Each structure stands twice: as C-alpha cells, then as structure tokens.
Length: 216
Image 1 (cartoon, rainbow, N blue to C red):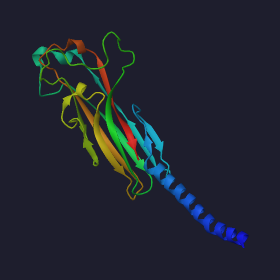
Image 2 (cartoon, rainbow, N blue to C red):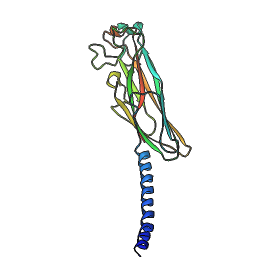
Image 3 (tube, helix red, strand yellow):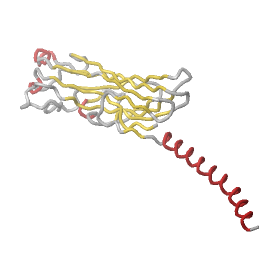
C-alpha cells in the first residue's frame, strides 16, 4: 500500500514540476528578449541581431566636414547672418523584425580626428577669442518622427556646445512592412564673424552623428 501511495505522489508531482520548469524557461527567454541592451557608445556603423525572429537594428552615418578658407574671413566682408560655407551629414537608423518590436536609442555628436592635419593646432574646434554672442561655427539637427530633441539641438547653436553630447532620444517601432528607417540630418555653417579668426585659417573640422545607448 505504501509503494502504491508513493507512485501516486510521483504521478502527481512530476507533471507540476515539468510545467513549472517550462514556464520558467519561457519567462527567462522573454525577459532576455525584452531587456536586451546593446552598448554602442562611440560606434558609427552598427549591425545588431536581437534575440527574437532575427530582429536587427542598424545605423550608418556620413561625416560633416568643414574646411575654413582664409579668403572667406576678410574683415571687410564679415556677416553674422549669412554663412560663408555649410556642410550636411546624416545618420540612418534601421530596425527590421516582426511587427510591434520597439527599440530606444540616443543620437550623439562627436568630433572626428582629421588625419594628417598639423598636430600643433587642435583638430577640435574652439571659438575664436572675443567671439561673444556672434555666430562662427554652428550646427543644427533635423529630427525624424519618433525622436525628441535634447540640449536644444534643433536650434542653430555653436557646434562646440554640442560636441560629445546627446542631441536626440528616440523610439523606433517595426511597422507591418517589417522595416523602418529614421533619418537625422545635421547641418553645419561657418560665418565670417567680426573678430580675428586667423587661428582657423585653412583648418578642417569634422563631426559625426552616432547611435548610442540602444535598448530593445
């Protein structure tokens, strides 16, 4: 009789344990997917495969390059309203996967070293002395739907105040088509300010947007 009771106990307990283990596996897999975090700091071109249905998030970016010509800085022709030169670069963020998958990320601007440029002078831009409130080297970001500006990035501002900072935060969601791309455009402008700008003569400054702090 005791052996029969033990068998009945095992028959009752074993299915419950199996179901519990299965549920734990499902929860663990689900948590791993929804809590997936990708560290993409200071990486420009990214291709990440997420743990469900081959979901991928990719970013590609171009470089804004501004060359300062000495001929554009004649004091008699200075202007605080009309730029002497401009440059544009873009960041494309693409998410592919099953409908409804969401990711969040930030957009950061960083200076890019200019290879071969005289190391005596810095390749990172610093405003001319006595610039005051005059415009000199500015930047402005255009946002896609789903993105929110940070640090007043959609207002034309001295570019050195943006360097190394987050300019936007965004949420991206896979639509029914299975693919979505969000595009950012960063516009640079150089002004012939009414101050001595000789330190920038014939220099080249480069900046690039990147996708950072990705969470899906």
